Image (cartoon, rainbow, N blue to C red; front, side, top):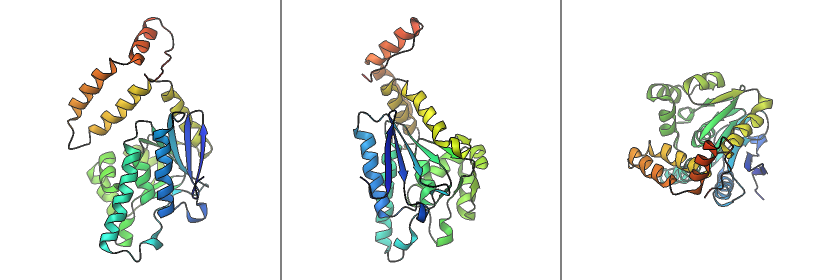
Length: 258
């Protein structure tokens, strides 16, 4: 179905694998177009409850952008490239279904930006993160300067971007860039197990948690007011009635997303 992706639905989780291992899964225009369509599927398909984004092979999640596409761009074309990339990554970030990055190797440049656009990250102990754009006379353009600063703090983010150093998975964990570090052969199974745990929760509440957490970082939104409104809306759902009743009856809740 996709020229550069492999996709598979596993127990409600849509596994999206960027499949250019010979190019270290670098992001070119075709990958970005395919990724946008795959994310649209996550939004629109009722049988998809969550998604995992990962890279094919053992070496790379995404080792950056396809630099060969940069050589002939004008400043205006470069800005438009960044705009289109930001739109796709914002779609990932703003999805009301959890999208998790399973980082299996190098996550550099646009790859690090893609991972950071996901709701959280699980890394193989072989993974390495970095924003080495200054080596090319560039800066991150798909939201990396913003999300990295939000995730690890201004000082550490600036150091990583200015030195172009690669951050090992264990350091990424201590910095707060990733949530978990696991053995490579456990990466997808562990990530899937986290999502299965989330699948058991009320879908509308999950969606509102994601929206409210994003509101905390939206300068144009009063996050507290958004949370208050979302909290109130939960009281109009059948899932709240089911969740409360199940709690009182000491049984597992059976949520329907209504």
